[in-house]
Amino acid sequence: MKTIMKFGLVLTVVLITVYAHAVGVDFSKVEKNGQKKMVSLALKDMNRTELSIYDEGNKLIYAENVTAKGKMIKKYDLNALPEGVYYLVAESDSKITKYEILVVKETAVIMSDPLSEVYKSVAVK
Image 1 (cartoon, rainbow, N blue to C red):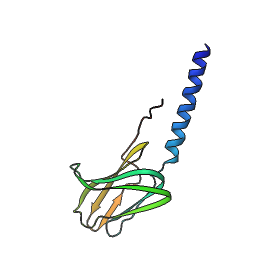
Image 2: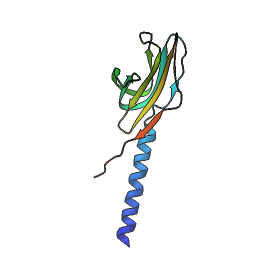
Image 3: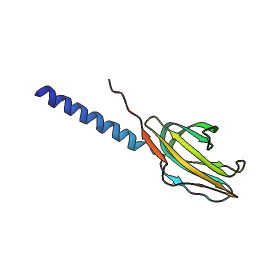
Image 4: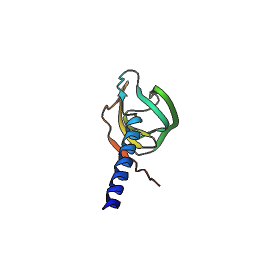
């Protein structure tokens, strides 16, 4: 019985730690900018994040690694892209978030709600 209680306590501590780490890394805040095919993404306290932009056929158009101490706003100029649907993927150590970007005529709008958000599992020794 003591072993089960110890295991439950350890599991609870691990889950709380994982949740606290996931909450501390935030790239889910997105600004809409419908002028001149520009989109902005706000990053907060990122250790290491890979930002990628893909076209509708899942072809990689742009990628960069970003490290943010405090708050950082990344702006992307999409003037060179033709009309269509694109995807911005932000991948950190704890999650992968995918946003849809619509490029129509002279505007680019990023949807404020993520298209998908997947939390990565964390192995504990």
